[in-house]
Image 1 (cartoon, rainbow, N blue to C red):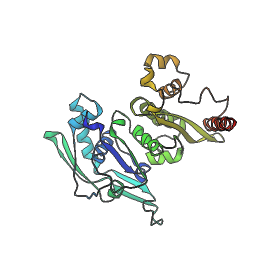
Image 2: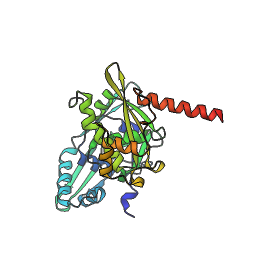
Image 3: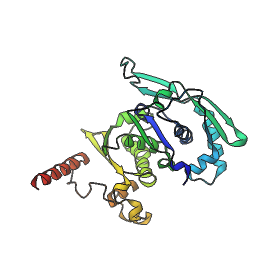
Image 4: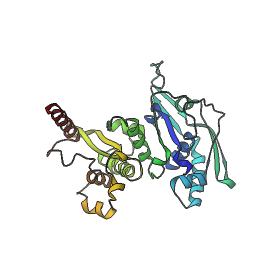
Length: 297
């Protein structure tokens, strides 16, 4: 079995919900290094973590090693400058509302070998090591094939609430944490460029299925409402062998590929919801009916 099967990313929830922007190559480098950390053990800034172009190519399933070399070099050039803003960083010190820190304290690139070596910054170490509670973990392989940084971010936010299967996220909060508030003023553009591609990739490449709706305040969309869960608990795409042709044939006007997959595999409320009813209303009504049926037995 491939060794990447065992690599697990573990982060404090503070980092999962932090505000930052990284390129896809930078995300892959950091996640590959984080997956090497013993999250319950000790970590210091002298600990060094290595990533190779060959290793990244193997992880993402790429046969174009020259592109991987190029991406790794680009990641090296910018990664030292990247920062992350963490809200309410200290439980015991509520006066500190935000903390801004670099991801790493040093990075070396060996061009002839397509290899980089880095150390995490002291500011990041408490959020990556000696974690006993309030953390999120997942297998690195489940995000390895993503081509969007937003897919990785959204996947982490859903995995964080894995035991609930539902999560409502404020639109403005998500834009701030993803650092896209200046790029997508209109929600329709945010959905088209960020949410829909992320949902599609999660449904296609990860171990999760996901579907989302939205909640309005007046005429303004204020929240996204996500319903999600592990694919092994539903009769999902791979088991039903849904082809792209079938997805295109079954798609409704304006429906994303991820939404079609969720609907066809029984992970949506489309057939259950009444006309004009929101995702949240349909879900609550379904729960109420289930409870009523239990009481009648």
